[in-house]
Length: 104
Image (cartoon, helix red, strand yellow):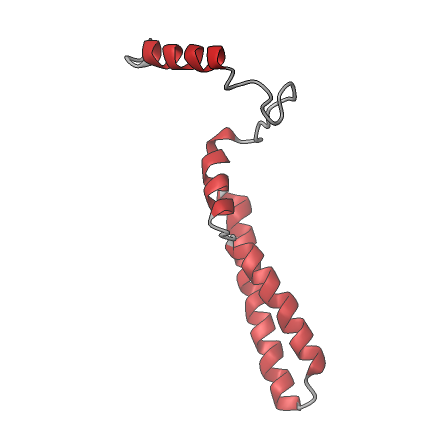
């Protein structure tokens, strides 16, 4: 089945070829990138352009930062609070990872 704009698109591409618009393009002659899952390609590109991060990445960063804070704490109550915060983050991370593995 052809699209109504196929003929117009072909004309535009042919005109660009004649003008040399496709000459000396970066990556010419090299294989194109094919994502593992093409259905996610648009979402991945949008997330990259928006500098968005998945909850797993965010939580792992928070855990890493929280562990660094914990090492610098000497007050027992502050250490307990920080350990409780880290345990909560680790539990949430485990739940998020399980959901990801189960549902994708």
